[in-house]
Image (cartoon, rainbow, N blue to C red; front, side, top):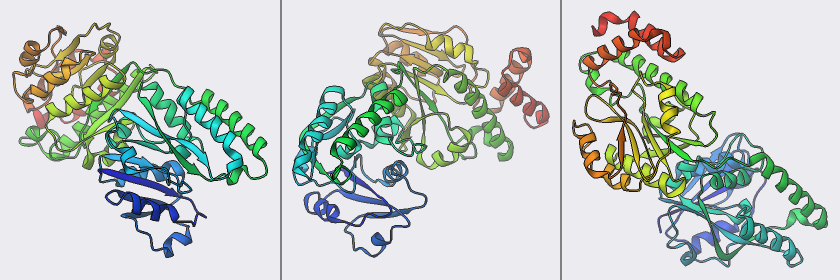
Amino acid sequence: MDLSIIIPVERRENDFKLIKQLREKFKDCEIIIVSDETNEFIKSAKLQADQLYLLKNSSRARALNKGASLSNCKNLWFLHFDSNIEHIQQSDLMGLDEFTVSTFLLEFDQVNCWWIAAGANFRTETFGIPFGDQSFLMSKKLFNFIGGFDESLPEGEDHEFIWRIKSLNIKLNVINKKIITSAIKYKNIKIYQSLKTLCKTLLQAIKFYQVRKTIVLGIFLKDPQSRESKSRLRETLNDKFVNELNKNFINVTNGNLKILQRRKDIHCIKVCKEVDEEKLNSSSNICKGKFINQDQGLSLIMSEVSKLSLKTVGKVALLGSDIPTLKVEELNEALFKSLDKSSHFFSTKDGGFCFMISNDEKVVECLSKVKSSTASVMENLTECLNNIEITKKVFTDVDVILDLRKVYEELKSSEVNLSFEQKALLNFLKANEKIFT
């Protein structure tokens, strides 16, 4: 089974029976333990885990996210350390929908807490709000798309995560099996602790509620210093200049995104290679979610991002990060367009496109068929899609030195209407004009 089981371990936790239980029942699965580095018990324990990571300044959210990043499998199971899985079999995890988050019903290890578990299960089945104790299962692709657990929260990361999947129209699947968890916090104070949990749940619902997203905006990014970023431009211009040029391009994109993010109905994801992600975090950290390119071709990646977005939110927009003349007003107007199973494109002078928005499921198939980096991209999409609109303005995609010269002239001719980031780019080009002219 292609599954990583991720278990966060706090500072004083020392009962490792869950690990033995998992190894007996889920022999083919990857077990990842992420522990607070100050946990002395785990350092001496002989654990049958595939990976053990000691995390500095650990929190549950940080540990869960770290475990996901360490995973080598397609699917993830986030499981609390005090769980007992005696009722759960490997067959219960088979055939799960890749576009769905799954969870279990709850049972406490103390019989007299049955009514507390019944309340938690009512909350789960009626309102779709499970506790983290019930564990979450999903594909790694979907987890990245959602954006992981919020590491800024000292508690309630599970609740915030669930409200986020609700905002993304991601379905919750409740598996009709019970996961057993410790009732120690309810010992001798069942009514008080239950009321406290109920009150916290209501307060967190108010705090974490999110507006339903109507658009997924995928931003295609590369490490500004990567040799793959503007490789054709690097054939004629020095790397130092191209690296700075790329940073300016990303700054222009970020400037547009910051304004667009004022609209609460947009879910932004960055689309990049895993090797680029860490460096991009420092230069483009606006997007909550991500889609990792596993060295697939551009056409396939655009198709997969579109499929995931349409299966969840229902509308997808794709944006390149190297169109410096693109203005936020143009993007905003396009994002507000009313679409009826149709697609809208901003074309580029090289025959491709720099932006698209669609709610037509056929776009998934059509994008997978186009030959990217050719002059026939828009021609092929026009033939494939039944309902397509292409904006009259044609943009310049900077691939070669001639494109850069065109962009330079376009920026100079509209200097008074440029954004702060576009003006910074123009000043950079003016200061280095001799390099590319």
